[in-house]
Image (cartoon, rainbow, N blue to C red; front, side):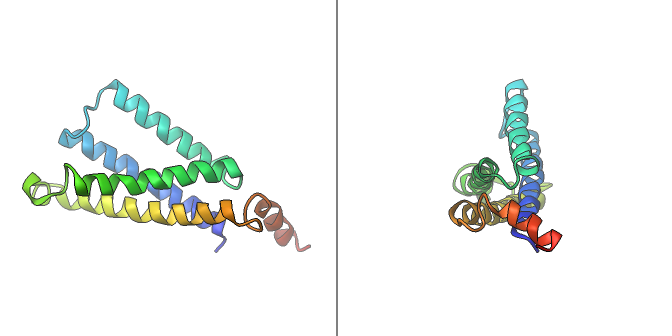
Length: 142
């Protein structure tokens, strides 16, 4: 499978898991759920989605995906250290606790994978900005 396709899939999964997680945070009262939260969350997700689908094989897209991957990785770290997952919080035993924790793990996994692939794309001269042209030549058969 092409690395760009894997990066796109990982990024789209991160976006999906991030929306699940943000929704769960609002339902549980960790986030206020007000208009500011909605606008901020939607703005971040739109930029992230644009970087994934429109700027997918460009350097600016890789930078956006790298930042999105780091954001995805940071969410489980913050919840594991702070409010959210500790046994004393009661989430592990609450209704929907399994989904909450599973979303954190899936978000972290997709985030790490996105960081690895986008960093590889940014740092590899053969795979970075010239990769799109190389893929097109390979598909045509040159």
